Amino acid sequence: MGGFRLVVCLWSVWISLSLILVSAQVPNYYANVCPNVESIVRNVVRTKIQQTFVTIPATLRLFFHDCFVQGCDASVMIASSGSNTAEKDHSDNLSLAGDGFDTVIKAKAAVDAVASCKNKVSCADILAIATRDVVALSGGPSYTVELGRLDGLVSKSSDVNGKLPKAGFNLDQLNSLFANNGLSQTDMIALSAAHSLGFSHCNQFAKRIQKPIDPTLNKTYATQLQQMCPKNVDPTIAINMDPITPRTFDNVYYQNLQQGMGLFSSDQVLFTDSRSKPTVNSWASNSAAFEKAFSTAMTKLGRVGVKTGSNGNIRRDCSSFN
Ligand code: HEM
Ligand SMILES: *[C@@H]1O[C@H](CO)[C@@H](O)[C@H](O)[C@H]1NC(C)=O
Ligand SMILES: CC(=O)N[C@H]1CO[C@H](CO)[C@@H](O)[C@@H]1O
Image 1 (cartoon, rainbow, N blue to C red):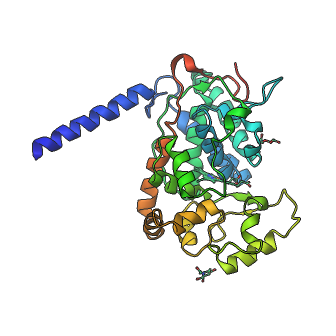
Image 2 (cartoon, rainbow, N blue to C red; image 1 turned 135 degrees about the horizontal axis):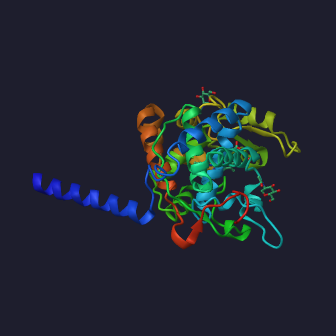
């Protein structure tokens, strides 16, 4: 038994080592060229949050969209030019708030202001670090960010088709899209707690509050949503996704689901589907278990489609190719 455990243990050490080597992702990747990269990024993020709260949800969502389309390679940052319509101009991006882009641009400038760091740190890694920081600075868990991603060489609006989840997705649709990115149902439920803060436009859930009202929606909450989002509402109006603690990253997201207060069908289904309900119930009452699962899932998300070698480079300007 002891011998077996040792073998299993060595085996998993070997597997993790080979994963690290294959993905070229290690926590202290910049130790020699830019040892302070994480504190430089953190300071920019902190200042930017003081200027506007939207920094937090905007950066978190930007990272998610980046990773699910072509991998975590900052391809989402590229501006369209000439005949190339880039990822960020796909309609599914409509609501990617400019403050996420701005955070990365500012952090990159601060990193590049240090001589030894100049043009040595990828935009993809800066986005990954900034994302960890916005979560931690809004009450969520902190975790070690694996580093060593290169910036991608391709960004096409057409590549976004079918890569991002829709607010009307059911559990099977959510699971299959996340599985395409190497993420389990547990990871998907954990990552959905990103909707613990930030904003949504009314059109994303308008159908649920029109008669007949979605029966999985809490009636009191439905009435509140109808008042905030009347028919013919200004399409630029956005409302809090977590009505109880909208500015804190926490497990109240799961408690809301238990009350029928998930904003999207894709949120509420995590509680109504018996396959995911036990996980929701467990994390609603156990914040530590949720935070652990979220950190694990974010680390896995950060490994999606990482570019190395000739598949990428270090962009000088995050919003355009070198
Ligand atoms: C599970 C499937 C998911 C669906 C269907 C989904 C869908 C959406 C939609 C429709 C919005 C509102 C867009 C708008 O009208 O402005 C939104 C907002 C947001 N999503 Fe998701 N999302 C999902 C998962 C995730 C994940 C995994 C993350 C990050 C880890 C994330 C982070 C966010 C954030 C932070 C916002 C607020 C953005 C802001 O306030 O600027 N979402 N999501
Ligand atoms: C609806 O939400 C209220 C709190 O706003 C809660 O007291 C009530 O139990 C919820 N109803 C259902 C069916 O979950
Ligand atoms: C932040 C950003 O660039 N959003 C763009 C997403 O795509 C729409 C077009 O569908 C643009 O108008 C937005 O500017």
